[in-house]
Length: 92
Image (tube, rainbow, N blue to C red; front, side, top):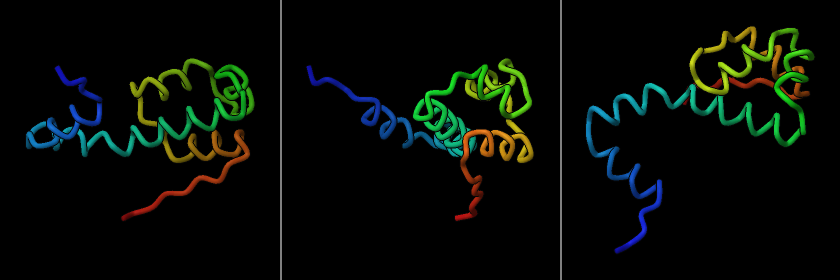
């Protein structure tokens, strides 16, 4: 039996119109979350430390990273600054 990768599974699921619609709807939030976690880990910064720097709470950062809330642009800007990063938003 051939081992399936996540990419193989995703490719198959994206052929389903309902799945694709939901995937497309969540894609921007997923990208924000992925980039936030990546920057935090690369900077070796805990959620608690980042929260302190961004003047928010660790619980808020946890909810963002768990994708249970959608952060405002203002909060994303504060987080980006706390990570010494620049926030960019693009329409493609």
